[in-house]
Amino acid sequence: MNQVLGEKMQRLDAAKKKYQATKERLTSEKNAQDYLERANKVSENDYKESNNMLEEVDKEIRLQKETLFKESQKLFKLRAEQANLIGDISGTLSASRNL
Image (cartoon, rainbow, N blue to C red):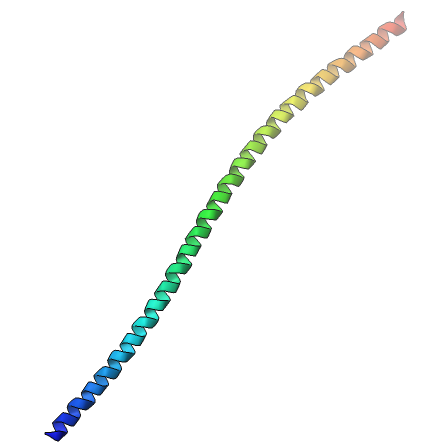
């Protein structure tokens, strides 16, 4: 009877050790999971922030392209006007020399 009781006590001790090891592993895995979830949230927030910045930069680029186009059109018109004025001046100078 003592031998049976001793064997059961050994099995109980082994089961307790196995339980404690499993419990510690579970705690360790839970901590790892919590860490990974926090890191994931940080990464998601960084991604969203980067996306927002990218959208703002794209919008700014579009606005700058539109402004550049408008300014190029103004410059084109001013150069055409300059060419006309230079022609008028040349014509007036020629006319005044002929007088």
